[in-house]
Length: 169
Image 1 (cartoon, rainbow, N blue to C red):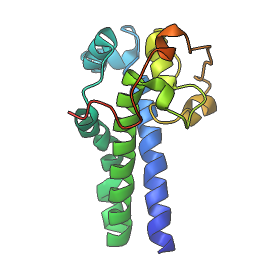
Image 2 (cartoon, one colour; image 1 turned 180 degrees about the vertical axis):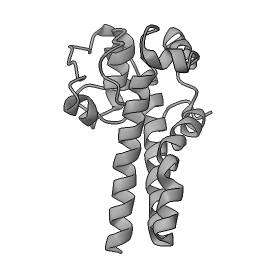
Image 3 (cartoon, rainbow, N blue to C red; image 1 turned 90 degrees about the vertical axis):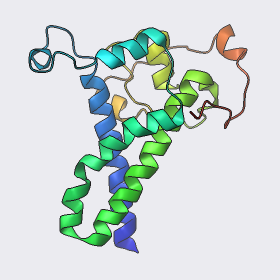
């Protein structure tokens, strides 16, 4: 049971780490060398910023599950137990990230586990170089991209809706 828990937790953290770095990569400047290799990188994400809307939890989940699955096949070579635990940890993080992303677009004050909902602030203040996390701010803090701001204004105070009242599809 200890081994399953360890692989599950590691998958959760690695999925979060991957999501953070992929999000940063989607914000590379047009002059960045990666854009010469992958000219379309970030195009869909830039449209997301223009719309300032999420796809619904299910749509977001389809995107976020890819982050943890990247490592999945390697773990199955190690052991079936590690592979299954990794799969569960990756799926759990993808669900959490999808829900967190949708919640921050619809009701950021409901993100009680963060002092400041970093993704909401990332959009609200057009922070192209800061606050890349979706579900957590720990990678932003660790890598120096966390930028705190006073974010609660009249618009946020007027938001209603419960913790589970988000667009699911």
